[in-house]
Length: 380
Ligand SMILES: [Zn+2]
Image (cartoon, rainbow, N blue to C red):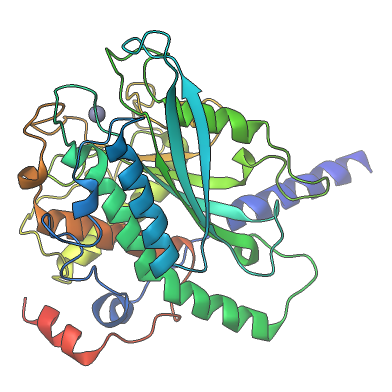
């Protein structure tokens, strides 16, 4: 009896693991003719609707920071009305502000299947930080991380209609009472504040927003009988983009052994998009260079300090997309709008959208692109 119970528990556990790792490839047809590309003007550094408003100094607690936060709220409100928006606020002393409490505002946008109640949805969580460094004065942080924020915004807009189509189709088919992970899976965007140190990076002078959010979500319980115990537990995969968008094609290692499977999926997608000629940047060089690394290979998961740290410490699986060698202008005044390579930014956005579409199993739910747009891209 006892052995039978252990066996049954193992089967259940294995089934749940397989469900969690569910991931359905997109067809060539979807990549070539259906998944929406970033719109031509999205990433124009002067007047593009997504990126340009973020390319300003946005030190926590300053008017620039609030303007960028408002830009996120307006973007999701106008373009993605089915998403739920919220802010998570905190304050902290810093080494440069004396007795003053500096405010930090994390932006959170979430969408899950309409039939799933709070506490039962699991999320693919896309993350970047939107604050900029306190010094040097006028620092923009275009790759750090204005461009990653914009990549995520454009990527989720690209998959939004397919999510609507998929969930409408599922709803019309009806469900079993016991929803599986795929039927409960949603997507979440975290644009975090206060990643940068004000003086120099220490455990207490850095990642102010991420530390506060991880702690709060760890302590926010869902109703009893929910699938997930806390808001933190509902993150299935925390995908953190940082220091991306320069044209330097810096290699990105697979940092974490427990999410190497997701890195391999993204690397496979990168290779397919390059092979199909769907990338705009001319780089022949691969970004995700460790696709072939084995699960028992070397993973340097404790080296890179970033917003994922308080989440990883609480057991959240994390895919960290950051190059091992930082961009040339890292933390210098030269990390400005002109430093960005816009085709690279667009390609990262497309790759993020395609990865999310596979994670959320959206094959078959994308409408064809308008013919005119297809022709324009086919000429590339
Ligand atoms: Zn930085």
